Image (tube, rainbow, N blue to C red; front, top):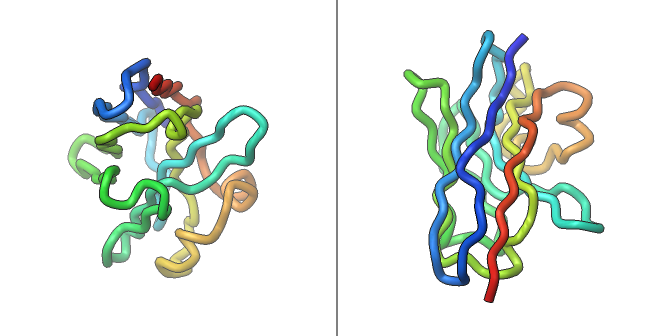
Length: 133
C-alpha cells in the first residue's frame, strides 16, 4: 500500500522560505488530485495548493497565492510545496494527499475537502511549519 512521507518542515522567521516534499513509497495510488493541506490548532484541515493531474493550472488558496508554488516530479513520485515570504499565520501542520481515483475534474480536486480524502485517498503523516514574527 502506498505511503506518503512528508519532509522539509521547520521553524523559521517571517519572510523566510521553506520547501516541503512528499514522497510516495511502497506502491502507486492512482489519483487525479495531488494536494497540500494544512491544519492549525483548533481549526479544520484546509486546502492550500492542489494539482489536477488531468491538466490546467494548480489551485491555490487565496491566502497563499503569489507566495506558494506546488509542483511535482513524476519520475521521483514526489510532490513539492515551495513556500516563500512566510507569515506567522502560515504556522500549521502541513499534510500532503493523493485522492480521487476517478477523474472528477479540477473543480472537484479544489473543493473535495478533507472528508472526501478520508473516504477515498491517502494522507501523509504531516510536517510542522512554525513561523515566528
